[in-house]
Length: 157
Image (cartoon, rainbow, N blue to C red; front, top):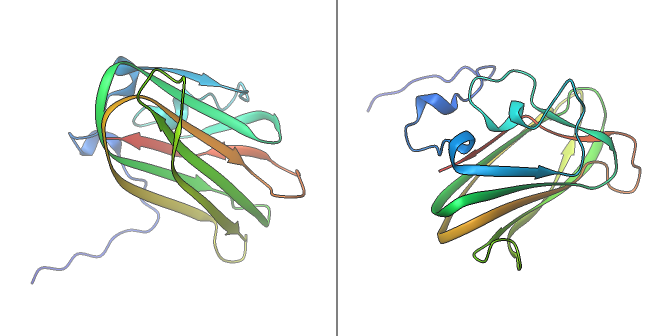
C-alpha cells in the first residue's frame, strides 16, 4: 500500500486533471450579480485566486449553458467562509433542453463556523448524458441574510 498525506491548505488545481471541462471554451455563464473584485470567472476558470462573490445579499443563481450538449459525470463545488458563522443552502440542477426545464441533482445545507468548519467541498458524481445547462442556486445565510453568496471554485467533468 502506498500512502500520501494531503496538504489541507492546497487548492485543487483544475489544470491538473485532464478530465475537467474547459468551461471558458464550452459554456456561457449567467449570474444574478457579482462583485467586480470577484467575478464569476474567478470560480470557473483554472488558476484563479479570488473566487466569485455576489454583488448583493440574498439568493443567487449561476447558470452554465453549454454551447453543445455535454456528458457530465462529475461536478465539484468548493465554498469558503472564514469570517461569519452561517448556514448556507445550495441546489444544483441540470437541464437537457437548453434551460427550459431543470431537474434537481442535490440540495445541501452546510454550517460554516470561523472556529471550525470554514470550507465545504462537495464532489458530486453524476451521469448526465446530454447536459445543456447546469444551475447552482445559493442561499448564503438561511433566515438572516447577513452575507453575500460566494463560490470559491466550480469544476465540471
